[in-house]
Image (cartoon, rainbow, N blue to C red; front, side, top):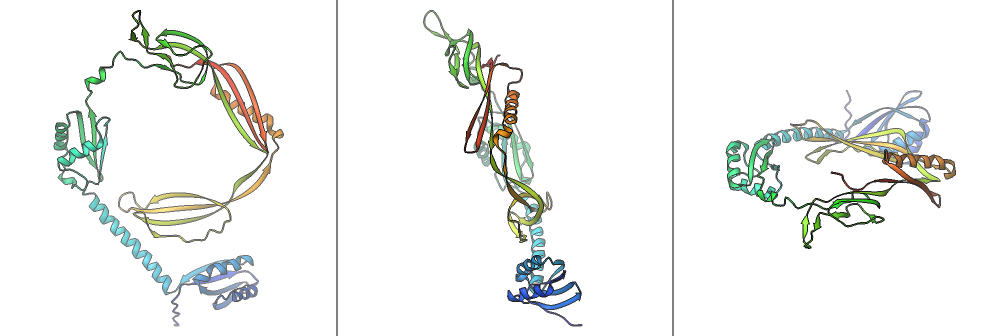
Length: 383
């Protein structure tokens, strides 16, 4: 039995078609070294060459409409690469299991929920005083005692719960209601506009007006102040109330291009899969993407949700093509007006419409259709 030893990474090709002589001549002109050329049938040829010639060989094969029916990688360097990848993958799995085992024994993250006035840093400082911080062993944490000690050290907490989950120490707390929060009873907020518009009518119930009929107002403008001035000239705090109706404009727009480039998918795709361990690449798919124009979609999955933090990155290359479309504005003008009209009417459903109009602005093949509907409605929140 003859043993064929190759040091470099080689690829053995089995191809089907015709024009084999032209193919071989083209490869020789490109100084491509071919080995063990063997014709297996009238239309089947077999040979092998170095891996770094693969791209040139395949380009020549494709030009002559020859089909590759089998490829086989071999060689000492290819063998080493496979062994390295497999050993690396096994090592990564072992390291991840050990890391996961060790990580489950300690706290690496402190999460605080339910705090508004008390800062997270105050809670973390309190935990440090009690001997708990990141890298503390979870077995050494007595959650019952910790809850009791936190409540004693921070009097503004009325209720606290402590639990460990994974590598996190989770603190849920409830703050005490302080009496000062009730000292502002009797002080009211001003009445503000909740829409842009022109004021058409005002019915003041109580408070001091800051607007008049005909004024243009913007959202959040103050319409009524929460006080009245008594006979002595003093301000008395009251709840600001009024019924204020305004003309409000609703608008929708559509832009049309007489000539535009549209992109569509051809249906051809190429998929690459890369492996990462702790965000470090352990295998990178070097497959060629020969599309002249394409879009990509990237997704991630894991070999396991718990034991092995090895991430698989899937990249899908989708071939696209572009073509120029010409649609004169006059051909679609009426349909665009109706479309933008329907859009704006969806915004004013069940409201009192008093006027409506559309405008068209055209410049250098760009056409903007705008439709405006004017309605009467309240611009204050009725309470």
